[in-house]
Amino acid sequence: MEDISSWKEKFEICIYAKKLIDKLEYLNTKVKNPVDIEEVKKVSTTLINIMVRK
Image (cartoon, rainbow, N blue to C red; front, side, top):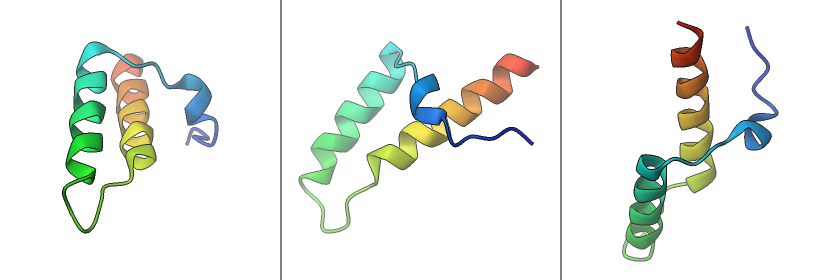
């Protein structure tokens, strides 16, 4: 299994990820339990890495 500890260095923002993160940041200002943006970035990086390998 690939080590994903360096995901921050591999994170590349695309237009769709930017829209998602912007919307989540906005919604985080409106809710009691905000979403962890770093976790969203980590998951999107992991998914992209999996898709690229196929």
